[in-house]
Length: 196
Image (cartoon, rainbow, N blue to C red; front, side):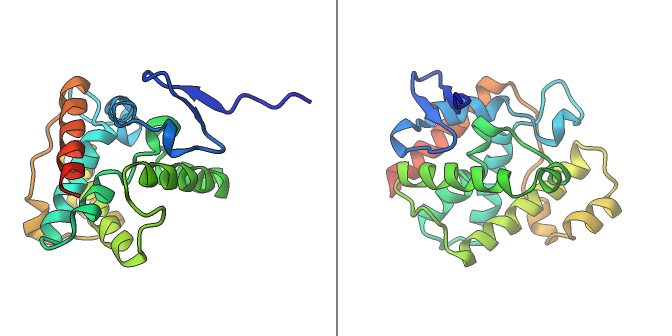
């Protein structure tokens, strides 16, 4: 039997094998472009533009860095790239991930390892760092929920946990055109990479 095609052609010209990704087939321009067009919250946000995973990633890195001001630059980069596999596999809300099962997580982990290696990070982020990035991710989700996704603060507190008020005020979420977000994501990536 013929195997189904498991690669995707990227705008850079690379062919990324989703089942066996290699660092050589990963380009930041492809990641930034893809993430700038992937909508968080399944697109169920207020405004004229979708709130993209790229915009979310910029916010998570900002929160993570504010929470950990002395963190090495490599972990700031890991925070920026925490959802990078979604440039090819999309953003699934947590209930859908749970329904899909462990196959999604395996795919995500393979892609993340290749992305990390491509940009000089360890394939696996230490558990303590991963927990801090996840905490920043939850604060970002809380902010998104009440600012653009129609949740009440009480609902967001119950689902995502009540964040530190200083961190919750860190940024006002703005919905922007994908081209602007793509540019800012790429610039932040290059800035961090240049400091490694």
